[in-house]
Image (cartoon, rainbow, N blue to C red; front, side):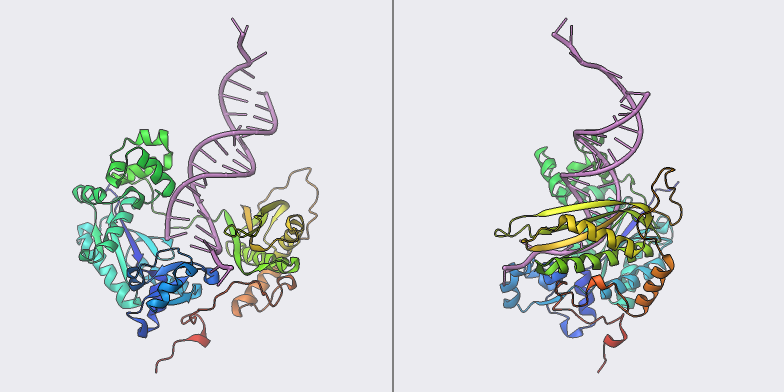
Length: 425
DNA sequence: TCTGGGGTCCTAGGACCC
DNA sequence: TCTGGGGTCCTAGGACCC
């Protein structure tokens, strides 16, 4: 059997690039994209990175810097990014036999055997050119015998311009050369906590980690880190997953645009999250048996006393009916709500999933006390809402939603809304 | 004043059982 | 003096990812 070869294709500055795509006037302008509520910087254009805007920084900390250099900010326009992502991914699917969409802006390709007909670097350059030409997004490509090494190859392609945006890391020599240059925290799966612990053992570079005995690592860390060590040595331990496994949990939560102090507003917010989560659950064609509701004050505030709490309930039978979960969620909220706090965030979580109709109730289970589910009604609601955004909703979701998130710098939905198509003048 | 959202996997430890 | 042992299941929490 031939050893597998992976290519990691990753879009450069994806959200910022999407924003620039429909604004040719911004070609050389520094641009940042903000998180929900316009709170943090979650993406930066090349120019913005150069000016020293760090990833994840709260906006208020860099406001001066942004003004000084006329950095343009956008609220997250998820509809736009998802649509552009889909275009990139379907193009990639035409270029490789097997593709794993790993996140909104990156995909692993199975390129095993490609080297017999053309050089892997050539293949990478072709991918890059086609995505650039067809969609207008720039990507970098890293190629290696394991996913972890492909990640590092991609990192190298992004970091060093003379690579032309493509790095073939299939040769052992090149692997060791690159690993020696990279600090251990650049390795996929090694976060800040593990970095600290590894450094205490004198492991600072990716190469030092690669050269540590996997059994020693398993004993002192975990099987996960052991796998990383093996992957760094070119042994593929993490397979390509073409088909996304079914979800095990669905979370819907948001920080509020303004603090909530009124219980009715909180009920609206929770109702909205329940409605979103259940819609997602039905899209997954699953039913859930377990519901958690949580809320909290801001963890960053000195003057607000901290409060964070959650409560769960187990349904008698799994359901995907919004009304069933709404009833339960309101009961849970009654047990969580305390007057006087300034709530900053809340959310709901669905877990314990079943395929519809397969749940076997216990012989002595009480008959369902919850309202009966009505899949047809839910289907109808989903259909109406697919045609027209928010055509129909539950009264408890409210219609003003004054607490909803801030998105004051939103760009048009250029590609997904007829009313907002770009206009050529 | 202002700090995202949505996931996964693993481990440790307690409860419980024989 | 010495106070079983091993298995399973569940949950909370920690760590990671983008």
